Amino acid sequence: GTTRALEEVMIRARVRGFLTERHFTEGAMVKKGELLLVIDEEPYQVALQSTKAQLAEAEAALTKAEQSKEREVSASQVDLDKAQLVLAQIQERRNRALVARSAGSAEDLDKAEADRKRWEAQVSADQAHQDQTRADYAVGIASARAQILAAKAAVRDAELNLGYCRMYAPITG
Image (cartoon, rainbow, N blue to C red; front, side):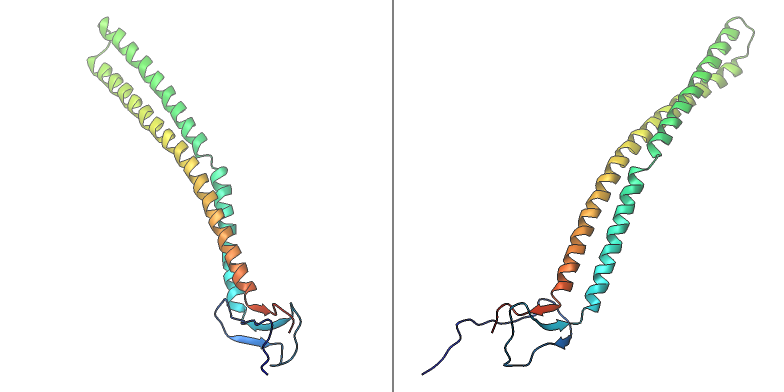
């Protein structure tokens, strides 16, 4: 007669590396869950540490993006420019009134008008910068959150690979 095992198991490594430990003798009885083989874990431990560092970096980037004061700085710059524009408009009106009464020079009026136009342009430019800053803020936070998700996935992958370095008996036999 011929005998054949009821259950057969083929143990294969799921990660690459050098076999560093063997915890059974061939042909001996092993219990389910017993440690059989260990592949060199050091490269996988290093990879796990590296991915954890990337996760910490991504979390720091999110904190930085959330705490950014660039929007407030940009809004303050627009307010400052608007105040300068109001001052330039007042100066231009004064110079127009003086020229109308023949008490001021055309040159002073031209300078006041040019100054007003410069501040109008500056307000427009800084408002555009403010709009861009708001958009950058939202994108920066979304990007940092995406980096965190990617880093968490990389950490999980590294943990799995490290776990695959230890092979256990799936059945008793």
